[in-house]
Length: 256
Image (cartoon, one colour):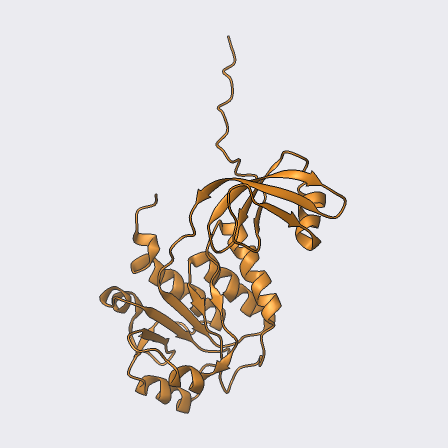
Protein backbone atom coordinates (compact mmCIF):
# COMPACT_ATOMS: atom_id res chain seq x y z
CA UNK A 1 0.00 0.00 0.00
CA UNK A 2 1.39 3.38 -1.02
CA UNK A 3 1.82 5.86 1.79
CA UNK A 4 0.19 9.18 0.83
CA UNK A 5 2.45 12.19 0.64
CA UNK A 6 2.01 14.73 3.44
CA UNK A 7 -0.03 17.80 2.60
CA UNK A 8 1.86 20.88 1.54
CA UNK A 9 2.22 23.07 4.63
CA UNK A 10 0.42 26.38 4.68
CA UNK A 11 2.53 29.42 3.87
CA UNK A 12 3.94 31.00 5.85
CA UNK A 13 4.46 28.18 8.34
CA UNK A 14 2.65 28.77 11.61
CA UNK A 15 5.82 27.89 13.46
CA UNK A 16 7.67 30.89 12.02
CA UNK A 17 8.86 33.30 14.72
CA UNK A 18 6.82 36.47 15.07
CA UNK A 19 8.25 39.86 16.07
CA UNK A 20 7.13 43.47 16.41
CA UNK A 21 9.65 45.91 14.96
CA UNK A 22 9.87 49.65 14.29
CA UNK A 23 8.21 50.60 11.01
CA UNK A 24 7.10 51.37 8.52
CA UNK A 25 7.74 48.09 6.71
CA UNK A 26 7.49 47.80 2.92
CA UNK A 27 8.11 45.35 0.11
CA UNK A 28 11.85 44.67 -0.06
CA UNK A 29 12.74 46.69 3.03
CA UNK A 30 15.58 45.35 5.18
CA UNK A 31 15.36 45.19 8.97
CA UNK A 32 18.29 44.53 11.28
CA UNK A 33 17.33 42.63 14.42
CA UNK A 34 19.63 42.86 17.43
CA UNK A 35 19.51 42.71 21.23
CA UNK A 36 17.04 40.38 22.92
CA UNK A 37 15.10 39.80 19.69
CA UNK A 38 18.27 38.63 17.95
CA UNK A 39 19.05 36.33 20.88
CA UNK A 40 15.56 34.85 20.52
CA UNK A 41 15.99 34.27 16.78
CA UNK A 42 19.55 32.97 16.96
CA UNK A 43 19.66 30.99 20.20
CA UNK A 44 16.05 29.95 20.75
CA UNK A 45 14.61 29.58 17.25
CA UNK A 46 17.95 28.72 15.55
CA UNK A 47 17.21 30.93 12.54
CA UNK A 48 19.42 30.34 9.49
CA UNK A 49 19.85 32.11 6.16
CA UNK A 50 16.68 31.81 4.08
CA UNK A 51 14.40 31.04 7.02
CA UNK A 52 11.15 32.98 7.39
CA UNK A 53 10.13 35.35 10.17
CA UNK A 54 6.79 37.15 10.56
CA UNK A 55 7.18 40.88 11.20
CA UNK A 56 4.63 43.44 12.42
CA UNK A 57 5.18 47.17 12.81
CA UNK A 58 1.86 48.46 14.25
CA UNK A 59 1.57 50.59 11.11
CA UNK A 60 1.43 48.67 7.83
CA UNK A 61 0.41 45.24 9.11
CA UNK A 62 2.03 41.83 8.97
CA UNK A 63 4.85 40.72 6.65
CA UNK A 64 6.83 37.63 5.77
CA UNK A 65 10.55 38.35 5.90
CA UNK A 66 13.48 36.12 5.01
CA UNK A 67 16.79 36.00 6.83
CA UNK A 68 19.39 37.44 4.43
CA UNK A 69 22.30 37.77 6.86
CA UNK A 70 22.82 35.81 10.07
CA UNK A 71 25.59 37.03 12.35
CA UNK A 72 26.62 36.23 15.88
CA UNK A 73 24.59 39.05 17.42
CA UNK A 74 22.21 40.26 14.73
CA UNK A 75 20.01 39.10 11.89
CA UNK A 76 19.16 41.01 8.70
CA UNK A 77 15.64 40.30 7.46
CA UNK A 78 14.10 41.36 4.14
CA UNK A 79 10.35 41.80 3.76
CA UNK A 80 8.97 39.76 0.86
CA UNK A 81 5.18 39.54 1.18
CA UNK A 82 2.55 41.44 3.13
CA UNK A 83 0.14 38.98 4.69
CA UNK A 84 -2.47 41.42 5.97
CA UNK A 85 -3.02 45.05 6.81
CA UNK A 86 -3.05 46.39 10.35
CA UNK A 87 -6.23 45.11 11.94
CA UNK A 88 -9.14 47.22 13.08
CA UNK A 89 -10.02 46.75 16.74
CA UNK A 90 -13.21 47.66 18.62
CA UNK A 91 -13.28 51.13 20.17
CA UNK A 92 -13.06 49.82 23.71
CA UNK A 93 -10.88 51.17 26.51
CA UNK A 94 -9.92 49.43 29.71
CA UNK A 95 -9.42 51.72 32.73
CA UNK A 96 -8.00 49.54 35.49
CA UNK A 97 -6.70 50.70 38.86
CA UNK A 98 -3.03 49.87 39.32
CA UNK A 99 -2.38 46.50 40.97
CA UNK A 100 0.73 44.72 42.17
CA UNK A 101 3.24 44.17 39.35
CA UNK A 102 2.48 40.55 38.46
CA UNK A 103 -1.26 41.05 38.65
CA UNK A 104 -1.17 44.18 36.52
CA UNK A 105 1.10 42.41 34.01
CA UNK A 106 -1.67 39.82 33.69
CA UNK A 107 -4.26 42.55 33.06
CA UNK A 108 -2.10 44.09 30.34
CA UNK A 109 -1.40 40.73 28.71
CA UNK A 110 -5.03 39.63 28.60
CA UNK A 111 -6.32 43.06 27.58
CA UNK A 112 -4.04 42.87 24.55
CA UNK A 113 -5.10 39.32 23.71
CA UNK A 114 -8.78 40.21 24.04
CA UNK A 115 -8.54 43.14 21.61
CA UNK A 116 -8.66 46.25 23.80
CA UNK A 117 -7.80 49.41 21.86
CA UNK A 118 -6.53 51.54 24.76
CA UNK A 119 -5.51 51.01 28.37
CA UNK A 120 -5.83 53.97 30.76
CA UNK A 121 -4.39 52.97 34.15
CA UNK A 122 -5.56 54.97 37.15
CA UNK A 123 -4.63 55.62 40.75
CA UNK A 124 -7.20 55.39 43.55
CA UNK A 125 -6.97 55.82 47.32
CA UNK A 126 -6.73 52.07 47.94
CA UNK A 127 -4.19 51.26 45.23
CA UNK A 128 -1.26 49.23 46.55
CA UNK A 129 0.92 50.24 43.57
CA UNK A 130 1.56 53.88 42.72
CA UNK A 131 3.60 53.72 39.50
CA UNK A 132 3.83 51.82 36.22
CA UNK A 133 7.09 51.05 34.44
CA UNK A 134 6.37 52.05 30.80
CA UNK A 135 9.11 49.82 29.35
CA UNK A 136 7.87 46.80 31.28
CA UNK A 137 4.28 47.55 30.21
CA UNK A 138 5.25 47.83 26.54
CA UNK A 139 7.26 44.62 26.66
CA UNK A 140 4.28 42.80 28.16
CA UNK A 141 1.94 44.14 25.47
CA UNK A 142 4.34 43.36 22.61
CA UNK A 143 4.90 39.80 23.80
CA UNK A 144 1.15 39.28 24.14
CA UNK A 145 0.53 40.67 20.64
CA UNK A 146 3.22 38.41 19.18
CA UNK A 147 1.70 35.38 20.88
CA UNK A 148 -1.89 36.03 19.80
CA UNK A 149 -1.07 37.24 16.24
CA UNK A 150 -2.39 40.71 16.85
CA UNK A 151 -1.17 43.37 14.41
CA UNK A 152 -2.33 46.49 16.31
CA UNK A 153 -0.74 47.22 19.67
CA UNK A 154 -3.03 48.76 22.27
CA UNK A 155 -2.14 52.25 23.46
CA UNK A 156 -1.10 52.27 27.12
CA UNK A 157 -1.26 55.66 28.84
CA UNK A 158 0.64 56.79 31.91
CA UNK A 159 -1.38 56.37 35.12
CA UNK A 160 -3.52 59.29 36.27
CA UNK A 161 -5.69 59.83 39.32
CA UNK A 162 -9.32 58.77 39.21
CA UNK A 163 -10.31 62.44 39.56
CA UNK A 164 -8.19 63.39 36.53
CA UNK A 165 -9.57 60.49 34.51
CA UNK A 166 -13.17 61.55 35.19
CA UNK A 167 -12.47 65.24 34.62
CA UNK A 168 -10.89 64.56 31.22
CA UNK A 169 -13.46 62.00 30.07
CA UNK A 170 -14.39 62.41 26.37
CA UNK A 171 -17.99 63.11 25.47
CA UNK A 172 -19.84 60.28 23.76
CA UNK A 173 -17.93 57.39 25.36
CA UNK A 174 -19.89 55.22 27.79
CA UNK A 175 -18.03 54.41 31.00
CA UNK A 176 -19.10 51.07 32.41
CA UNK A 177 -18.32 51.03 36.13
CA UNK A 178 -17.80 47.60 37.70
CA UNK A 179 -19.28 48.32 41.12
CA UNK A 180 -19.04 45.58 43.76
CA UNK A 181 -22.01 47.22 45.51
CA UNK A 182 -24.22 46.38 42.56
CA UNK A 183 -25.57 47.77 39.32
CA UNK A 184 -27.31 46.67 36.15
CA UNK A 185 -26.48 43.17 34.83
CA UNK A 186 -23.34 43.52 32.72
CA UNK A 187 -24.39 41.34 29.78
CA UNK A 188 -27.73 43.06 29.20
CA UNK A 189 -26.19 46.50 29.65
CA UNK A 190 -23.42 45.79 27.16
CA UNK A 191 -25.95 44.51 24.62
CA UNK A 192 -28.13 47.60 24.95
CA UNK A 193 -25.35 50.14 24.41
CA UNK A 194 -23.66 51.09 21.15
CA UNK A 195 -20.73 53.30 20.28
CA UNK A 196 -17.39 53.93 21.97
CA UNK A 197 -17.15 52.31 25.40
CA UNK A 198 -14.81 51.86 28.34
CA UNK A 199 -14.65 49.76 31.49
CA UNK A 200 -13.61 51.12 34.90
CA UNK A 201 -12.29 48.54 37.40
CA UNK A 202 -11.06 49.21 40.92
CA UNK A 203 -8.05 48.06 42.97
CA UNK A 204 -7.67 45.16 45.41
CA UNK A 205 -9.50 47.03 48.16
CA UNK A 206 -12.18 48.47 45.91
CA UNK A 207 -13.28 52.10 45.61
CA UNK A 208 -14.06 54.08 48.74
CA UNK A 209 -17.42 55.76 49.22
CA UNK A 210 -16.31 59.17 47.95
CA UNK A 211 -14.78 57.65 44.79
CA UNK A 212 -17.85 55.55 44.17
CA UNK A 213 -20.10 58.58 44.52
CA UNK A 214 -17.93 60.61 42.13
CA UNK A 215 -18.05 57.87 39.51
CA UNK A 216 -21.79 57.36 39.80
CA UNK A 217 -22.35 61.11 39.48
CA UNK A 218 -20.43 61.28 36.20
CA UNK A 219 -22.80 61.65 33.22
CA UNK A 220 -20.99 58.97 31.17
CA UNK A 221 -20.92 56.33 33.92
CA UNK A 222 -23.15 53.26 34.04
CA UNK A 223 -22.79 51.03 37.09
CA UNK A 224 -22.78 47.31 36.29
CA UNK A 225 -22.57 44.15 38.34
CA UNK A 226 -20.32 41.22 37.44
CA UNK A 227 -22.26 38.69 39.47
CA UNK A 228 -22.78 37.65 43.09
CA UNK A 229 -19.11 37.25 44.00
CA UNK A 230 -16.51 39.91 44.77
CA UNK A 231 -13.81 39.52 42.12
CA UNK A 232 -10.16 40.43 42.33
CA UNK A 233 -9.20 43.48 40.31
CA UNK A 234 -7.47 41.44 37.60
CA UNK A 235 -10.34 38.93 37.41
CA UNK A 236 -12.94 41.66 37.04
CA UNK A 237 -10.96 43.45 34.32
CA UNK A 238 -10.39 40.30 32.27
CA UNK A 239 -13.85 38.79 32.74
CA UNK A 240 -15.76 41.97 31.92
CA UNK A 241 -13.58 42.72 28.90
CA UNK A 242 -14.15 39.20 27.55
CA UNK A 243 -17.89 39.58 28.13
CA UNK A 244 -18.00 42.91 26.25
CA UNK A 245 -15.98 41.48 23.36
CA UNK A 246 -18.34 38.51 23.12
CA UNK A 247 -21.47 40.68 23.09
CA UNK A 248 -20.54 44.00 21.47
CA UNK A 249 -16.97 43.58 20.25
CA UNK A 250 -15.27 41.73 17.43
CA UNK A 251 -15.95 38.22 18.77
CA UNK A 252 -19.42 38.44 17.27
CA UNK A 253 -18.11 39.31 13.79
CA UNK A 254 -17.48 36.68 11.10
CA UNK A 255 -13.79 35.80 10.72
CA UNK A 256 -12.18 36.50 7.36
